[in-house]
View 1 (spheres, protein in one colour):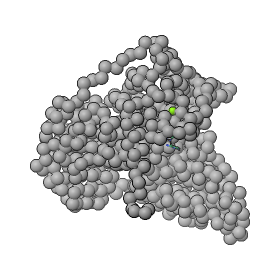
View 2: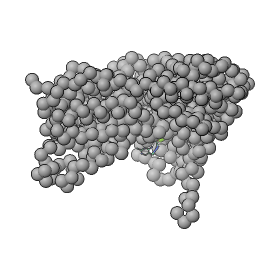
View 3: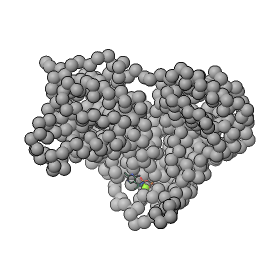
View 4: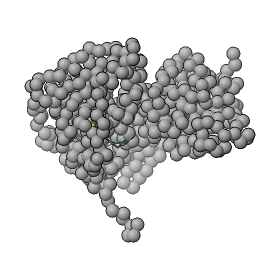
Length: 564
Ligand SMILES: Cc1ncc(Cn2nnc(CCOP(=O)(O)OP(=O)(O)O)c2C)c(N)n1
Ligand SMILES: [Mg+2]
């Protein structure tokens, strides 16, 4: 049988380590889906809609390093653009693949279904160019190898999504076999001279400093090439305090003696806030300072920073390109001297362990009791997803045991992300215990993907915190629009079971009911278990309320230019 463009793409996806590709079929991509299905290394995963499909691929990329989402033209791609945006903001190489019109249609001025009703179908590629690091449209079969390899390589190197558009009549067109995959995957290593110079500059930046601190951001993990392990070694060589930004929770072991907490301004944990502000040198690695991570710009470090990014390092007065963070951290480890001043200070400042009250079984369920019971669930196998909402704050406060993974989407912040993303993640990591903390409002956005968890018999535990509405929004700025229609969430799981599912839906209004439901969930190994936890709508974290005030103030800043 002839080797085709679709076969070429399938082989490249398999060669870069993809084992599941997420799809919604449409007549512009059906031949392509057949070709992908024909590759023995790929398992097709159908999703209920393209928003969820792209968010499932985003979650899969967190687990696998790279992912693929295959949709139909326009009606499919425009929804998938949302998960693609998430992958861009969260630094994940999601490969968005869209079917497109037959190559003969444009020159025949044909009006087509699934388009805007004009004869110009180029709008999708143009939109994709804005939200990916590389967008290609294959117009002739012999171009496919060059364009497919270029897009995939760019995405892998930049840790950003890419876009590949394939006309419906080209997926089955004749194509050559791919060349060595190393041409696509070979990493760009640091320039030796720049690496040396950057490490010397860092040693200079640190020399004479009494109180250096390391601050880790979410791009540390995204950098790959052993950056997380290299960071631990550097920290141990320096002996200094290590704080992490909220979106980097879990990227440094929280049981490590040098971990001082989550640096999140006034809503920080441990002694991170005071230690970071006490430092006289701050090594920022993979940090992202946004309005949300700086609590409306109130939590910015107040000294000149050294910032190590995925492929460059900057200092006050210096910049070094083509320095890969993993190699840089390892190289710097050989140059630093041990100085435990900041850890001595931390041991003076660290807060006493908080005595967590255990509710009596008949006590009405509270946010604190939910957190206490989730904390007891966490172990080395856990992958905890926390959704936009008060779940961010409750999740960030939990202590991660060694090996536990934490996933949050704090840059893009699309409510509902956690359900499809946890589904995609769990497909790649069936060995992990995936737990989702999600609010009622967020759950309503992408609830359909629970049915895929049922279909694939994934034992995901969904802790749905029902506080009757959009509480995070209430704390930023309240209005009638923050009210939502309540669902019978537990009953919904029966609907998703259809005639053969193993999902369980439980509701808990007291501490005892939650305890019992958690036991049922841990025993349900054949499907997802949703536990609807009803709490008072005003039962939200102090951190959310404080953070909400500062974010609202940042949003309300008057136009700066006079007369603007
Ligand atoms: C796609 C999308 N649309 C709207 C928003 C704004 N938003 N952010 N958080 C919310 C409400 C979240 O409510 P819940 O999930 O119930 O969480 P809680 O804050 O715990 O009640 C909205 C409506 C958003 N973050 N993402
Ligand atoms: Mg809510």
